[in-house]
Image 1 (cartoon, one colour):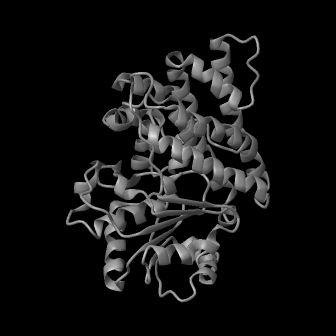
Image 2 (cartoon, helix red, strand yellow; image 1 turned 180 degrees about the vertical axis):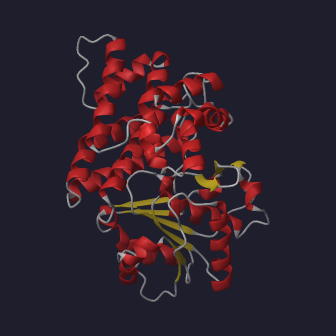
Length: 382
């Protein structure tokens, strides 16, 4: 009988009033002088200032250097701010970029290691500073996973740190915090969450627990993403999306993601394409490749996305799954080809080579991919 593990943030606090628990949680973690890790946009639109209500009595610092596709150098920049301010904990406020920078900085500041020493699996030697994650997007699931993804601009690659020491101590997840998301971010992050759910469900490491979370997330996303995209003030849809993102994060944080993410990394590393858009663009083409390896599961995906599979063969049901996913992407304005985002055929060989090296993710995929197969998928996506 195989063994599976299930790992998430130490504590999850969800709901519209989740932020009212921030001070109590910081006190329980022994944090008196936390550093808020965020970006300039959230500071400008007042989201950072909204924390003042919940941080009365705390002396806290602010780091706003987070970028959409965060570079490795930003982690050291954040560590310098932590050391200069004597900060004893971190509050990650933002999307996956802010949370991943905070995760990385939290362990870099407490370990006698260079950032390059941490890339890989289980290479972090000891715990980091206490970390509270407050997501402002509904998509990455970074608030409940043990992975941080950073951009190496010199190598034109995305690199990952995977360690249980990256799991946040507390995740405060409130739909109120996602209201400032631009429509394009709502779309890209929502489809990103769908990718997480689908890849977790198709992963060779899937378990009954991750399956239930992944299917539940798919159902909620297919129903609520169009609503949240059409009306940013629909808090019911927003709450459903942050919950679905959380569930998808718990699923992929334990089952892993596969070829979609592996093929998406070179798009971000070489062309600075946002992670969510990269994943969303490639999802239908990788699904087409994978379906012969998982026809029964594709039927379940089709049903989770609202398709009727009565009297359909497994092949027909798998086609419905891909069609439903493409339709959802079209609803929310996701690009459908590489050329739409400025990537042409001459870039494919180098991208395929880069993607073929990401064995940590490709090993989770239900169908084996060689470099020539990856090139074929990229060409289909042109």
